[in-house]
Length: 348
Image 1 (tube, rainbow, N blue to C red):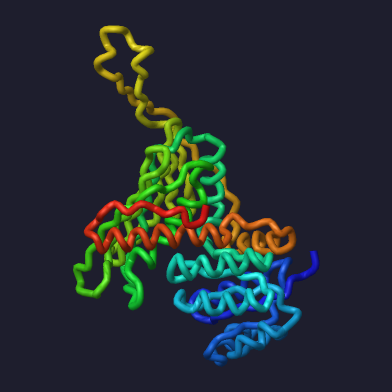
Image 2: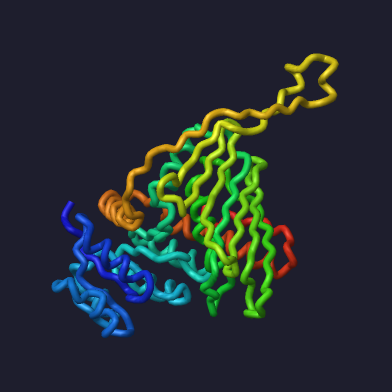
């Protein structure tokens, strides 16, 4: 596979990470970094002598040697920048969230599909070794039937000016849920509650629950006000339960052969059938070894593979659209005091 000419738009918080990983990949050749602040762009590409800095998007779009554009600009600008790149025939990688609304996200998906171009969402957590292992375990049936998924993503700050805590933090967890759930198990409805105890004008603490099609539940707690940082996901299965602690590099994943078993009525003694028998299972815990690799490096490999093969990546535009659907439903529920909001089939 020949090197893919690439450009990055946005030199703020996330852009330099994209620059570093594209520059360090064996699949891409980085040609441009575009930002409205050219001094900032030049500072980011300072050590890469063959990468040009510009404040004009047209410089990138008019370059025939640029086949792929990675976008790390504010979410409100994603649809305009990405549509221009797609119109210019470029494959696109977009930082989360895909867009500011389902309607805008659908424009991007339709534009990419109609042109035969790759539209990929940079749902970076999905490409961490831990989450890729969780997906493998869940989808192989190693945990059994999924009974619940529970995540906590809390820390102190940063209170955003333009979005609430659900739109800021929950996309990470919702994209993980979408990535790991077994085939055929999908969210059906969302309920969300939140609070603004500091008077910020938007929810700073949020709780979001989703009813899944197999009768299970997925839940996430997001919080800007916690004095401690917590990043955990628990996936409960009928056979085993998995715990991911992202802040414990020595043991990120733990798999417990522990849980609750319920005897079926037809295997009980006749006199016991009135009372279902509950038993508690307490077996071993194992901690699988994980390869250490930066998630963004894997993102670049997946993006390049999708461009070369024409096959959609795991976190394609439709995955981004599904996450947007969950976020919009959560916002409607939040405004309605926690009402249950059915999820539309926005991207199936």
